[in-house]
Image 1 (cartoon, rainbow, N blue to C red):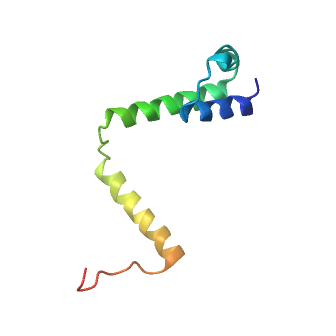
Image 2 (image 1 turned 180 degrees about the vertical axis):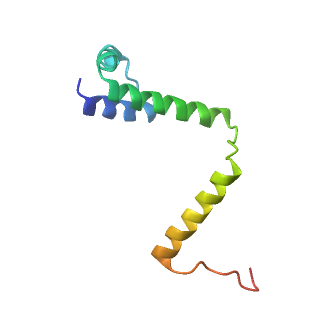
Image 3 (image 1 turned 90 degrees about the vertical axis):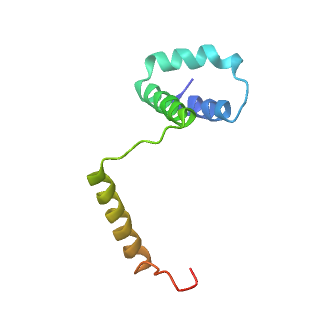
Length: 88
């Protein structure tokens, strides 16, 4: 199994397909491929965070920098931010 085949199978699995026939190949590939191990681990962590449903509180300084960065990128791409009107 190649990395590309593993990622395709992983997408199918996430979409609900049954992959029992390739589980052995999947496991063998993961055992020897660190990049695919990282991808699968990241997906597992993302799913776990999503299922837990707990918001992550960002440090205030980071949140402010992130908002400023997003605002700057928006202004670079679209110009000045839209200002609210009297009608909302």
